[in-house]
Image (cartoon, rainbow, N blue to C red; front, side):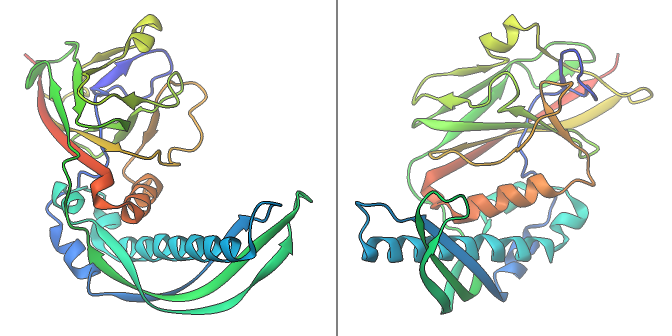
Length: 289
């Protein structure tokens, strides 16, 4: 499925989403948890008039530790078959590899002038040994996703209904049978999508509908049936992902050879408390009569 809009490259029911839909590769996460990796990372915080030296030192150390864990998680992912196959398994989301620092050494730290002459910054650089661990699910934060029907005929319009138990930021993707990913939300027309606790969110939204954007099923020539997945990720805090936009299209697209989106997503989620994000998947089928 794909949103029907000018400039849309691939239109295969540009519906949904999520990008962590990998095939049966739960073993990947398990293998990664056995790994240890040494990384070097840096944390920087601005040192203002109201900032104490102790607070700046602590803040930069925390930032360096987070950066080390993100870097290590990226190593765990790239060293597994996850990226090679690019099939995101739902199991992986439930046992996504996080990282914990088991040993660290401060390489250097102190006050430095900022590159842009905007004042001093406190910088900490460390070397850390990070161990991969599976995240444990906890808390009552949840998100649900539903389609207006489970089976569509080629050319029919679709609607996605999403609801979260708490206020959240929405990340919505469409993953086709041939592993093509389209990011539905956020998008060029709606750079940020917020969910309100207990309130149903419809996609396409009113903003998109006013721009003549529709979600319509579409099969490639010669294909009679396609099984797709829709995935939603909701987070309490925004993720600095999906940088840049496709100039001629509303939605950004990734083919199976582009793994940056997956890596970035996993790195960020790995640093979140498991209670601060939730995911859901909806499967659908498109048929040609």
